[in-house]
Image 1 (tube, rainbow, N blue to C red):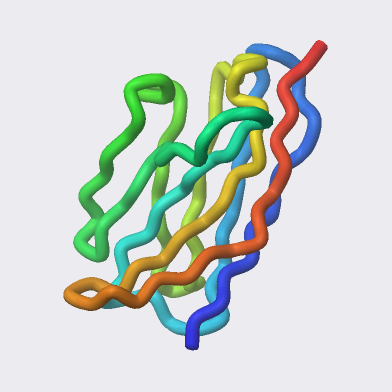
Image 2: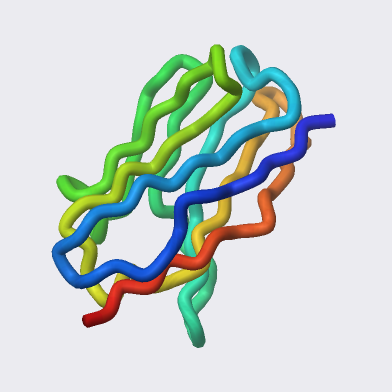
Length: 117
């Protein structure tokens, strides 16, 4: 069973950058779509970016052009490069894995990102 651990969160000034990592305990090289979600205080969880097992990507409109999702299957890791960060990006960022053609899904524990001067 795959477990996910996120890292890389922290405090950054507006306009700054962070790179989040999500490392899986097992292989995600095939058969897993991966995604980053975020949950801000008082708001519902929202999809930020996803990358399919084949490498196709999709982004929320609010982060297009600023965030980039990528995966390194050899390291069982998914990344979220976040540039030009804004205060409204402040949230807990969660990694999600979905085994394709099934309903199986798992989540990481989340990593806090705070954008503030």
